[in-house]
Image (cartoon, rainbow, N blue to C red):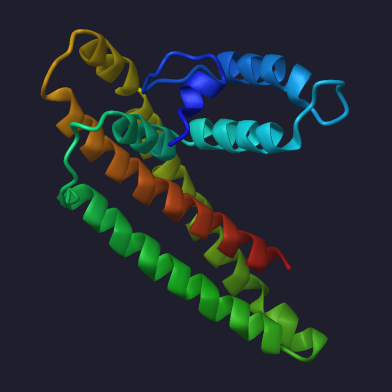
Length: 188
């Protein structure tokens, strides 16, 4: 397995400074770019994949756990607040899909105009929901520096907490993507 941290010359960590990541990427990309004399398209592809992985908090945490072979995988149940949010996401996505289908099947200017209120309501609901999901992501990201501190102290319980946080972030990132996709569909 490729160590994405090592490939970019970064220390393995849960919290990632975006500017540091970008700087490391640009530095590594200078000599690897295919247009450079010692360029290598395969290594450039690996570098691009590494930076993409490390930009995503959930994928970065999973990669960090994968690099530590002592982590055993287990099912992680979601807390009730996230289950409630999941139910809300599901309802809003379903509503947005129905409104989008209505808009696509509307054939006259009048029928499209009559749907504008429904479209606006669905968009507003999705934007509010996206704000809630984003605030949860931000709250979880604030926990990452403490996980790094615990990793540096070789705290044996950190891996379990890291795994739980990774699962939460993975769900939230997926929901953000789904919400953004529906918002785009509603704008067409």
